[in-house]
Image 1 (cartoon, rainbow, N blue to C red):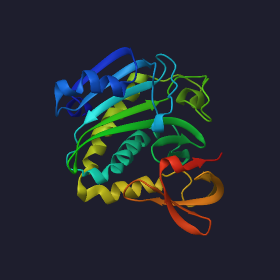
Image 2: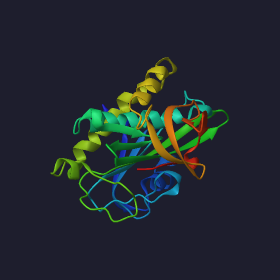
Image 3: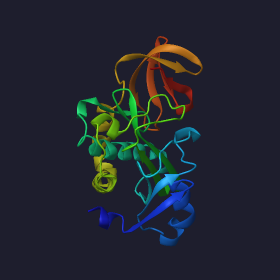
Image 4: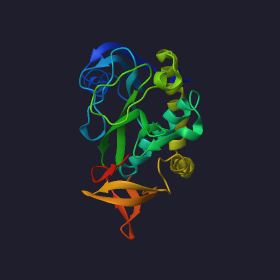
Length: 249
């Protein structure tokens, strides 16, 4: 299935980041054709809000893909985070108990309170439409030690106590993306939105957060159509963007 959905594929030993490599070396050569680039090592791997993504050489799944979701309006960009997060979720539930997997807003995959995967999405907008989308995915597969200042990384190998086949997981992920893409049609967006909320980390429970520089006891109640997190705290309901909220563990 994924072979048809992603007809252009490339593997490289190392690069600055797969998102950057795809933009500079592949996307413009194959316009309007879905493509994937995967690497064994990124020396400037990026996460959301400019964070560094740590990954040991040849241990994890590091890839970027370019798709053309032209049915989506510019104001619907956050739907792509939901689509990709759920595609990752469907893969990981083959390896870990589904009840313990969660999507941490906006787009990280968590097992209990530990981070397994992250997503970086970059859109090209023309007028009021999304022309193309580059999706960067980092999934910790076989790394056993982490040295960066990230608070809570883990990997499938650490959780399962054995190494896994990264090539097999890549195929599962690309198949899952191909299947999930059909849900981007307007008739299925409500289903996608509801599924995302049911799997959202910390939803409807009270936890400590740092919000706009101050610590509060708050409850996540949802995500609005523009991707802002909806929180009950300080006696009212407010929306916050990613730079305004810090999870306290």
